[in-house]
Length: 220
Image 1 (cartoon, rainbow, N blue to C red):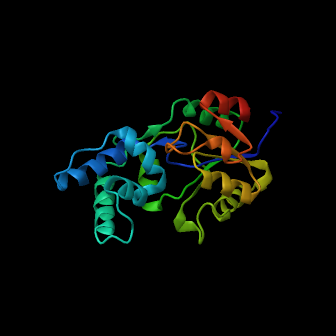
Image 2 (cartoon, rainbow, N blue to C red):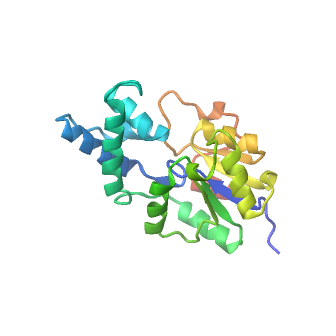
Image 3 (cartoon, rainbow, N blue to C red):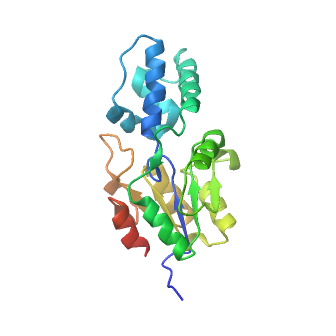
């Protein structure tokens, strides 16, 4: 019998499990082109996209949500994003090996994301994983999103595991706070979409990993 350090592994989606920044870059540059503006480099988009479409619009156009152009710009961004959801989105390097090992050891895994279901579902349908997620929790499924623990607790119930026997991997402070609030073991992934002023070591995660190999060593 294979010893398990954890009974389930949960991942944030954008910036943790999947590199979605290239497709967000395409989408925001389409919006910029419509306005006759210069495109954004992908590196800049990576620093802003962790806060979703609102964060990307705010960063790109230097406006807040109260600005009359904010919501129209956000809707244009989402329109273009729907057209290119999986053009370049991929698993981060090495995570296919992690998922394959989870399958070998019969450890269920899931996704807990603040990305709406209407975008999450088609992305997951187009990508090929070594094993399928046993739970996918989006904002549509809960009342309170991360950093509230509700979504992680729901995932644990669906996987029939106690939260303290689960591990949650994320690339943002809200991920670590949600995992901690749920009673799960938390892992900060530094390969994610970090802004220039963020320090993952200050988040208070139980563990910090810099790549999939370090995550493998932690999990198995």
